[in-house]
Length: 485
Ligand code: ADP
Image 1 (cartoon, rainbow, N blue to C red):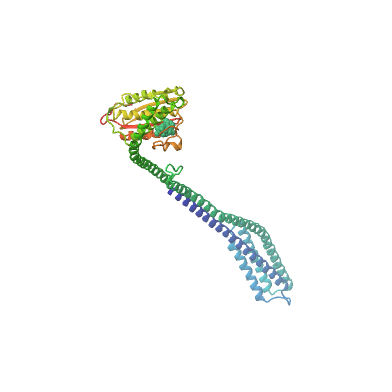
Image 2 (image 1 turned 90 degrees about the horizontal axis):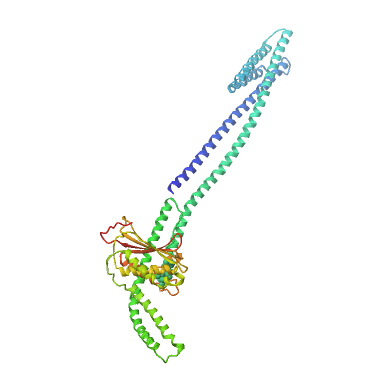
């Protein structure tokens, strides 16, 4: 995120600096062009003034010695102005051909001035005077023609130049206007993108926090990157740990409540149940019971037996017997559990005949310290649950494994059944959670309790290819590194 902020600010600054530089240079260029144009127009005016002065000198020449002639001072002033107008031309033009032409013009001007001077100062006979006047007039006419020719030529160039400069200025104006409109838009767009990149992850984090607050402990944040990704990962870890703690607390709380309840209840219920069972057994042997009611006592006894089994499981779960620890080979315990399972009606019934048990045992599995009968009960429960989950048959793989790098043995029971639904997987180890019509919901809760009594753990996952897997981990017998797989 920090990198993104720096990049966004650098891009914005670069855009502003480049646009500023572009605007300044284009304005400077346009001003320089306008400056040249103004100077050229000023020269144009000077040329016009020169032409006017020459024409006035010609008129003075014509009116000389008439009553309309101007004073000598006025004539001299005009002629001097011609000089200054020409000098100004030299200040501006630098091209070689133009300079040559201007030098010619100055020479012509000098000749004209000399001719004028002779006319205005000479005292000679009439024919000489007339000849001098003609010379001066012709020089003036030549000068007018030359200035006119230069004016015509520069006029065309100037018009062309003015047109192109104005066009260029108009173009520059459009570019600057577009730039001035586009730069804030680009900055706004960049700001929008940046803001979105900031608010989106913050929004995701906010939603996640709210959902966590509402008790959705399995909610996780996905798809965030950079620092937000790190925050999301920490959040996910926190949610995971929170969920683990919550489950453990829930589990412990239920176990305590159940323990207290079950002890009292079992005693209270067991005695009347024994009485009912004894009465029913007596009743079933009574010859006076009618034929249609003969089955009733055995049905009641059957139901009483179910209650007894439930009470036993409840007591087992609430106050599990202390494990009798001894050195145990888990492969042997599993063998015994599998033999027992195979005798269960679930494996014997016609519909389940196709259930196959695959034993994938690690050779020379290290020993563990455990109560073999309690573990047998755990594995039997898991095997019967697996068979229950495959009403149309399938395969159960029982695998044991061990890694030299781990202090734990692992026992996996994989089935090819219906698997665990998203809402089920979180609750299966809770007491009384069942999806079976005749289930008690105590099998897995008891299994977990017994495994934890052994310092191990149990977890359930769905297999990628379908079905569920229950993985039991148990600690190795201290000092037994085994050879393992
Ligand atoms: P019960 O078997 O009496 O229902 P358990 O505690 O043994 O109680 O199991 C709880 C629930 O877990 C079952 O009702 C079932 O929905 C689910 N379950 C257990 N094992 C499996 C399995 N191998 N495949 C699918 N669901 C299972």
